[in-house]
Length: 208
Image (cartoon, rainbow, N blue to C red; front, side, top):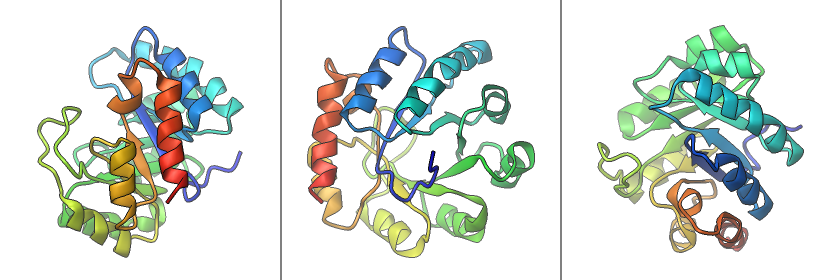
């Protein structure tokens, strides 16, 4: 499986739920090509159990699975990547624990974060920028605004995945300023029809 993030553009973050596997399977059918388990509240064994379910499912679609924050669970599960935020384990520590073959993503929210990410770009696989607008997923974050997203894209040699209330309409709006990589949470995860939601996003992205 080619693990390059450059040709991946629809990234689903989802937490541990009773129906997580079903949501992810429908999302993969609809065109999602990156999946992350983003779980802040559950016990490690629950996250690991879900990872064990999702890794073979994602690999059936040639899609990498990330786990948020937890290098230990990435190592134990054999997940493809880890995503870390500004207050989490350092990227260099991720590499020390997980080696060079695991994908590493890093969140950025402001210029100082971007400067730090650019300084270690040789150790990351991609960065995220956002949330471009305020979102319930990260209530402590104010929106970064479009100017920050544009600067991140202009300056980063690695793919920049944009977060913050992504839906088909926002894909088209962000696409006008050069965004080509999108992170989605609620639009798919909270949808009554994850396949249909993912399909609509895929259609919008493919139209850019």
